[in-house]
Image (tube, rainbow, N blue to C red; front, top):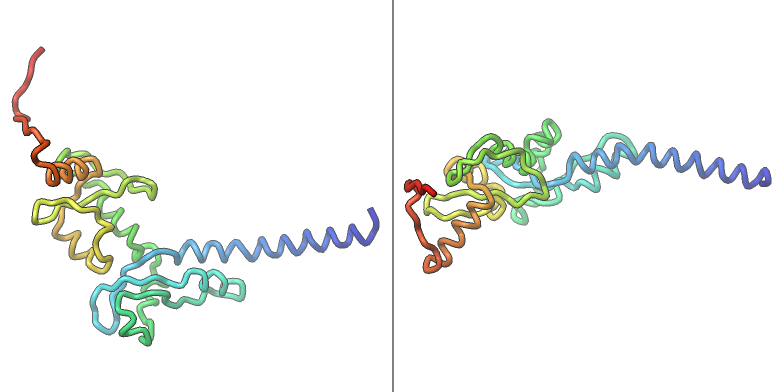
Length: 188
């Protein structure tokens, strides 16, 4: 190897190290601010759902602290030009306003109203649990408008995925369901 090729290799290794060193905070910022969140709108004092521009936050860490701005809000497009003061809530506590965490914390430790199975911590690849509404129908939690979740979670009851599927089938095809007395003990 010539001295020039060694110098080029050394420069490439140093540049790669610098890029890797700079990429770690950017990836961390993206992961921190990615996802739909619930905030209290400073203007209306109502719960709204927002998405932070996570890519912008990640890229801005290359030049210092992450710069937060909204990508979406449930009050847009009408109020698109607001001051985005709700971002202070996200900046102060990004984990506790993340919808996934709010719902996961709500389910954890509760029991399914049908089978009484206790809910474990939710995982992203699991089937989504459901909710039993006042109309005695089950619906997956992620089918609601996010900004309505606090109200919904105060009214509805938790239902596991398996019971949700069984109850949905019972409502859709009642002619195919045979009800049996569950109190009868069979002996063999």
